[in-house]
Length: 240
Image 1 (cartoon, rainbow, N blue to C red):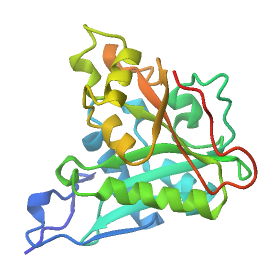
Image 2 (tube, rainbow, N blue to C red):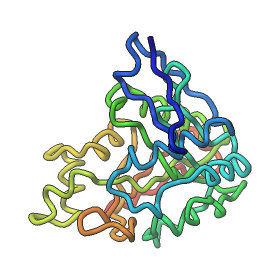
Image 3 (cartoon, rainbow, N blue to C red):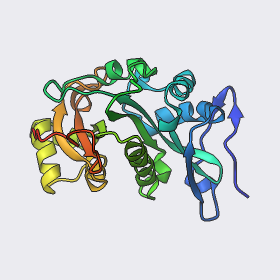
Image 4 (cartoon, rainbow, N blue to C red):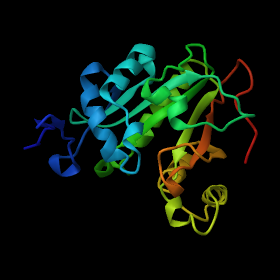
């Protein structure tokens, strides 16, 4: 018998892999209003190192649906949300790439969404720990890529967490760490997977997570170009 996510003491508990006894069926769909409470509950489980101010709340997800419904996706395993991604359209200045997470997403509201923006910005990509390394993140990235192609955007941009850097922070800078991951000398749980998904490393965002401590502040600015873009250059050539 599969245990369903349930409400208890006003908290929403997410399903774990052990809750699903049969082979799970993954379905990726556009996020709907009925998903947002559970998606908010997944945030601290998916991102235990983030400050609570950086978690997306239910009202944030609802605003994403109001602004850009075609850019929001949820992964369901036997009908239960276990992963999601939130995106918006922006124009981006690669000559001045430094920015913070909370600033660019307007503290979760995505108010900077530009319906005519040429880049898809990945504001959030999360998969519950028990469901990682099962291809769910890859499916969510594929849906984002499909949006880029359908809207004829120049590509995707994201600030990717560097969870492995904490183990090397006393030995090297985040830039050197990222270069070693790109070269295959080191493996990062997030950046390595993003590189395999077609992203390329562009720069280090040094104070991306302003509320984090030490090694957890930095992120990798990554780009996935749209090779089918016909309305101008499909990407940038700057490499840090």
